[in-house]
Image 1 (cartoon, rainbow, N blue to C red):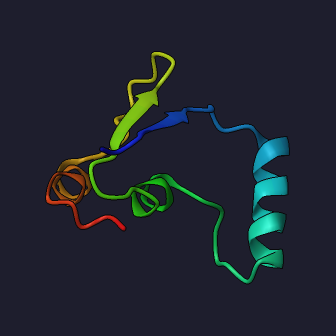
Image 2 (image 1 turned 90 degrees about the vertical axis):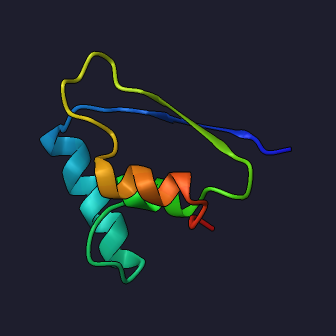
Length: 74
């Protein structure tokens, strides 16, 4: 049995983006977390639930959706 892995979309805000970029830099990462980061955190039998707040941008396209479906996320 897996878990419900929930995400909440936040529209881009310059003040938050700057903080995210600074945190990523401090961790030695090139960029802040993104959709792929969440997908990489999925475990076996997990179900991903995303609230897009009416955004017209998809959470995952064909490649990321296939990645999730095939269970390659760890």
